[in-house]
Image 1 (cartoon, rainbow, N blue to C red):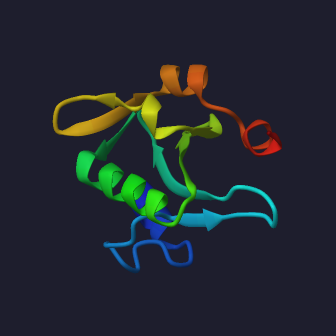
Image 2 (cartoon, one colour):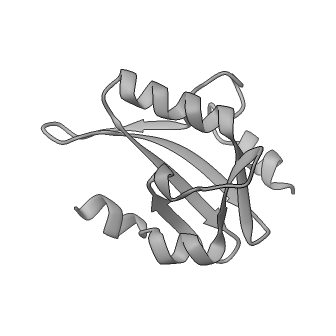
Length: 112
């Protein structure tokens, strides 16, 4: 099954292509987050510049912190700030190597 098909099986995923993020999470008396989730079988993940611009703008509008959640095959989820993405011209890109260096695991990220 393709990653796109897997993602489309998640409730709400792909329902509205204009949605600015995948998840909005928060806890009472704590800062919340908007989360954009991406996965790849390869060692890089590309995200369009427009998608990231819209995501960050939306996050600012509702006063939440934007976070990119990345999953590379057999590596688990890594969470990182969009500032860690690298400009590749048309897109933003993050390599598995950099994601492992800069990203945090779920328990590390949400522990702070």
